[in-house]
Length: 63
Ligand SMILES: [Zn+2]
Image 1 (cartoon, rainbow, N blue to C red):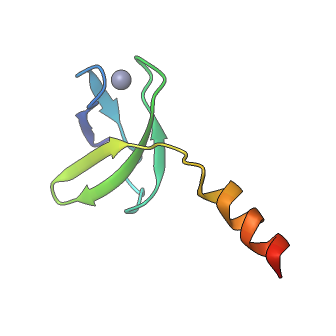
Image 2: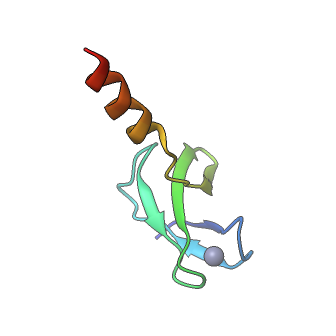
């Protein structure tokens, strides 16, 4: 199983071998959600849910 390093806690993170770019994995060490941003080499980045969804709701209400 491929591993990479968690950007949050620097511990090894196990990524499913069939994961694709954009998949979200959870660091077992610190619980952070990590997005797969690269596969060769395997690379993950912190996945942060932002408030864009709320902004979209506001836009819909205007129509
Ligand atoms: Zn971690």
